[in-house]
Image (tube, rainbow, N blue to C red; front, top):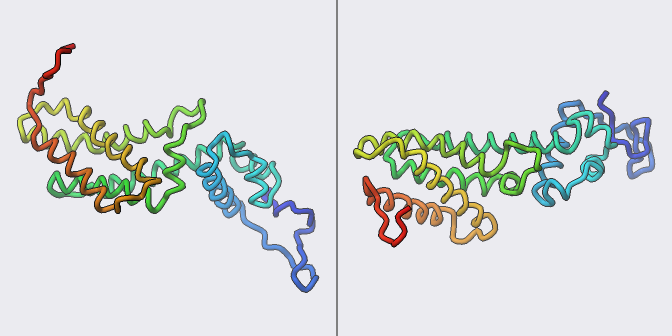
Length: 226
């Protein structure tokens, strides 16, 4: 059963400023779950998974520890739901931005999508770029980059084919491009200079002119050949 906050008032009432007892508003199970997710999201972003405790989550929600366990089975379950939501939010923003257009414009859209997410969902991005629990096989920053690169891969594959390049190399270039944008975004998370549009322009400048001058069969010029 979903309970009210366990602050010593077992009858679900609390004193108002006049000293009278006022009945507390009881949250529904869905409302309590969302409250715990919001609190957990903030704490995980600020302190990381290891630095956050069930006790602290419960205290900030004004409930007892069993309420957290009831909804999520523990800290790991809460963390998994938070990460899954952030992953889906970012992936939706990136894939939604990749609409029809010139390939260079698609690069701009992808760069802006990631920077928009960082700007709007800063706590979420901090969680994604932190180290995940050892037992967590998904929801890592690396897996997120890989998922986004898969979306970019199809676009690059078509562009490679049109230019007479080997489309089988598109996954490699997709990983390289998305990794460049993601790591730059990780740096911009705290720097916030220059402005977002300027960061996007410089990212596209490097990516596009690199692709524009791409050699069909790149060669090594150093002494090492293997």
